[in-house]
Length: 258
Image (tube, rainbow, N blue to C red; front, side):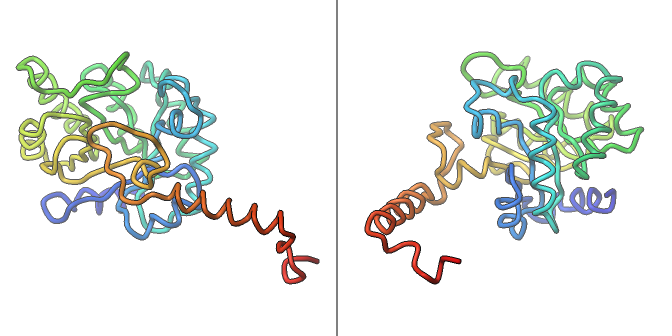
C-alpha cells in the first residue's frame, strides 16, 4: 500500500497526475488503464442518487460502491471519500476509516478541511491510514451556490496555512477545488506533496474530474467541467435499436435463446 502511495507522490514535478472517479467495477476497469488515482467520490450522492448535496451520502453507500470499484482496479491508487459526519472527531474518524480500509481494501481516504481536522489527520497517519486532503470549495461544508476560493487576502492566507498544515500532518496529496489559479500555483510550488486540481487551473500537479461528467452523462453546467464525449447518444440509439428489434420480433433469434 505505502509503495503505491510513495510512487504516487514521486510523480510531483515529473509528470501530470491523472485522476477520475468511479462508483462501480465496470467503469473502474475501463479507466484504470489511464489513471494514476481512482477516487470513489461522495459525488455519487448527486450523480447516482440525485441528492441535493453530498451531506446525504452514508458510510454504507461509500463502502458498497468502493467494494465494487476495488474489483475493477489493477494499477491505480484507490482512494475513498469519507462522507459528511463520519470524521467529526479523531476517535470517530479512526474507527470509520479503519472500517473503510478493512472492508474495501482501498489505499487511503480523503477528508475535507484544514486546521479543524489536523488532530484527525495526525491520528490517522500515525495509524498507517494514508490521507488525501481537500481544500478550496469543500462540498460537505458549503451551503448554497459554490464560489471560487482564494481571491481575498483572508482566503488566500487560510488556504496556504491549511496546505502547509496538511502536509506537516502527513497527508500524501491535496485536492484543490476551484482555487484561484495563481494561488494554486503558489501552493503547488510551496508544498512537497502533489496538488490535484479541479477547477484550479493547470498549475496543479494533476487533475481530477467526475467520470460521469466527462462522458456527458450529467447535465453539469459547472465552469470546470469539460464533456469529452457524449455517451448519452450511444445509450439512446442502443435502446432505440433494442426496442425496434423486440417490437419486430427480430430479437431474440435462436442464437440468443436456450
